[in-house]
Length: 99
Image (cartoon, rainbow, N blue to C red; front, side):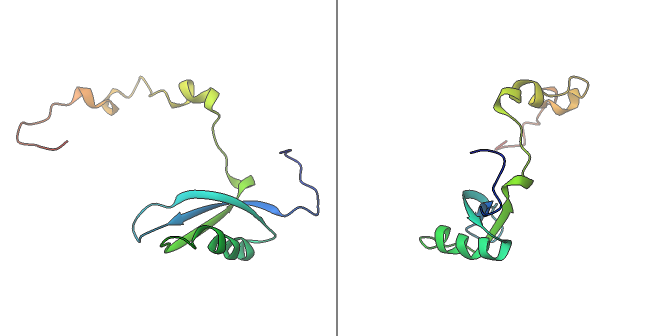
């Protein structure tokens, strides 16, 4: 799909659903709607009809900024000057279980 949208095309929204209170919201799809209220109503109709959903988020797709899979190696590589972030430098006491 091209980046440029015509004036007659509705905005694309990404939909995130939460199945139980306290659980994370999971991306479940996308849809077109003219505004946030209509996006929520459409998301309810499309993505919550088969399961238990306690909360929905809709986010304009154009507001999501993401990395590219081609950047993954360099972008997510841990900083070499912060070795304390690497768990292999810590010793775990024998009394600690289930880590």
